[in-house]
Image (tube, rainbow, N blue to C red; front, top):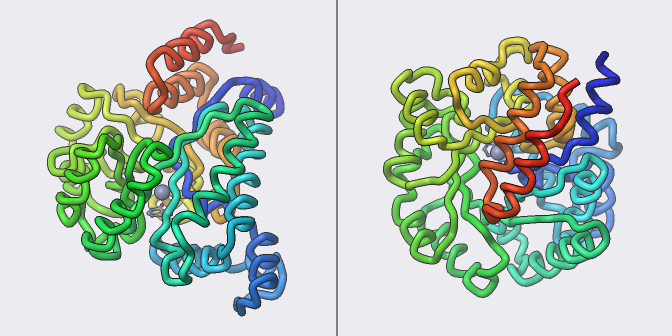
Length: 337
Ligand code: HPA
Ligand code: ZN
């Protein structure tokens, strides 16, 4: 049964809309880059790194995540990081992905914006040429830093404006509400960016309202705490505001105790445009398909529900309408047995 589901799932074209590229840094690459650049990490082996993947909340994860990302220094490092993930996209049939990259993470190590972009672009262009990979980049700003810092990063991105589709907001949510970034989102909107933001992962439903009403986002990253506010759920459903939900992440960061407690199917039943994503797959125990498989195993998610989630992924994407429609048509004819 499970094998048949996995095989069926593998053949379906999918999107991924919530993926932090630094969160796809595999332990072996973290160690080899630390070695290459003479950076001391408190881990000697892949098992040492993986043994540290025990998180009690978002912050305990972010501490390791930023330490890991500190080994990324030159153009080749960024090329390999991107290519490692795009190869997973090829293998899992993720035909379109919208990837969050976080330049503020590398700035303390004097990494130039242009260095990072050169590595990313080289990988993206190769993947597009070699297997037709479709990629959008999201300029993800860090909410534990100041709005000023984010605005400076937005300005630095002006030189690469055509390479980004959207801006996003990530990192420590509690204590850094969306209202802290009103000027940033207004400036991005003026520049023609689409807008997304993490809200309602650890933060309350009120943060989701703020992201909608003050930042005017097109899409909410996570958003699972919306269920605490029935009016918000009705609004999200009516307005078809997508939620990019990340099941394995939610369990690893203790948003839910167990996968069997996850509310994703409830959200789907209430008519929300819910999508499935991996967030930080190297740290949370699996890439996109592993997230679908975990839902199937723990919640008994069936094929019709799976197809709906995959369709939602195309609807929620920033692909051109004509491309979306072609995939949606293909999916509406996909066998669910
Ligand atoms: N939440 C907030 N920031 C993040 C996450 C997350 O799940 N992953 C990487 N940065
Ligand atoms: Zn995230």
